[in-house]
Length: 95
Image (tube, rainbow, N blue to C red; front, top):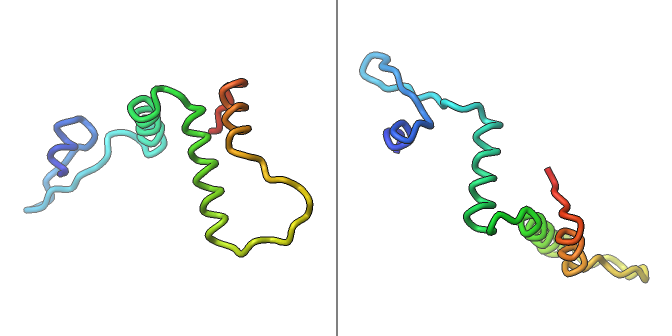
């Protein structure tokens, strides 16, 4: 696997005795940003809004599983459809 990463230019190696020591070519932050751009491009048709919406929906599902229902306060939760409208209307991007 490390040889494949090295062929693609993501890692370098050096010999230390009989072992190979691999190091990353890009800093962690730059690699993370590149991976997120690739993810958005390939899976979400270059729409950052869909990524934001998916993260919000995932967070809402996780919260529902993590804690028991709170007593009703009369306030309605923000619905995912409204958030989708906001993201597409104003092109909101969360970094």
